[in-house]
Figure 1: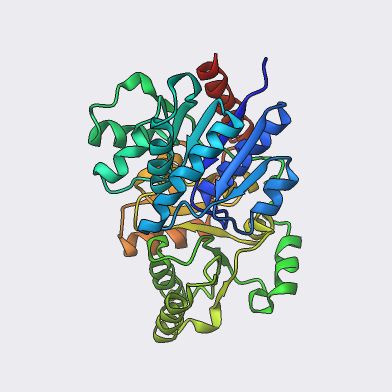
Figure 2: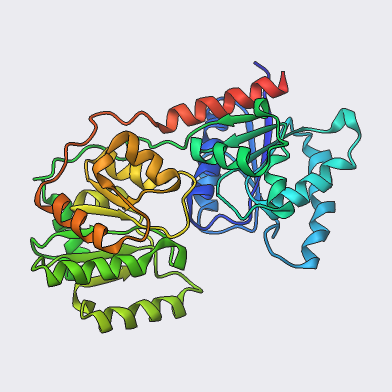
Length: 370
């Protein structure tokens, strides 16, 4: 098999599912003997990307500004210089820039164009660029159904469902009675010490992640006599200060400030899952996939979340007891009490693995490149 050169385009490499998928595919490409190049504005994940053997070009291709259009020329020069076999766009503005850069290349030098629909973005011409690929990767059946409903002109044969996956080696099963992870977390965060039930809501500090629902749930549990704690790693990040202040104020109003911990993202997320008793996935906007559901279940911790989008799809397959109707806070509280009092049986095997996602994506690349 000849060596491929694959360029991936995305806004930045800070944190999030898109960024992690980018690193996972870059690592798989390098491991298979191919050349992996990532173009983004940079971020804390550049170091692990480079450590995997991939390359990074710093271009701010995600900033919504007219000045960003100058990067069309930068991308065109890059494509002419490295002669990629595949250009893979993972976000809308980088996709538009990449598409314009490709259109003016001679046909013989034009790489194959792949897009991934990572999110259920508002339908329209701007978002439609994510369906422009020769192959359009959908990260779940929910995403494929969304694309077919809102972009009926996209031929079905161009759509390929490649679910995101979990590396079960990085998220090994931990027995529920094993408290070592909780003790380790408590040594870093004394607020979480003790035997009270621990709820975990991992994710960025954005309104879409449903932190307010988690705080209301925490207050409801306290009112029901359950002295739970809530840890939300990922909320405290640069630029999120005003939102975190709102959450702090709401926690004070609800009387749960002493039981709440908001931190920066943790590098030991598997340990965080193992330390918890219940993992929350209450995003107001439907998630395209819901990777945290897989990670938590792989570790052996139940999940509680809204029954919509990719989260609802995964829960229906793997832990139906964790799905409750969207925005029904009373049902959320009742189910939380049930899951804490009587933890459900969880799947012994996670069918959605990182290795399967990497394998299927590389097979897509090689089939396009001939």
